[in-house]
Length: 72
Image (cartoon, rainbow, N blue to C red):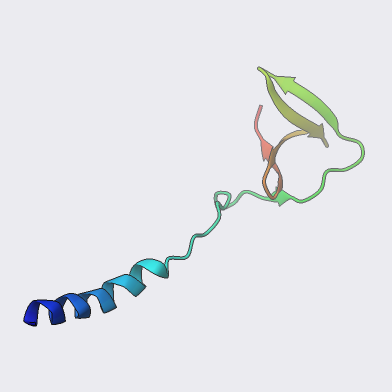
C-alpha cells in the first residue's frame, strides 16, 4: 500500500511537468534583420547551386520569416 501511494504521488508530480513543455520556433541570431517582402526590382543569383536574391547591392537568402542579408 505504501509503494502504491508513493507511485501515485510521483505520478501526479512528474506527469504534468512533461506534458507542459512549450516548443519555440527557430529565431534568427541577435542583430540579424529579417526583411518580410522583397522589392519588385530583385534579381535571382545562383552561387554554387544555392539561390540568392540580389537588390540594393546586397544579397539575401530566403528563410522562413522572410529574407536575411548574407555576405558574399
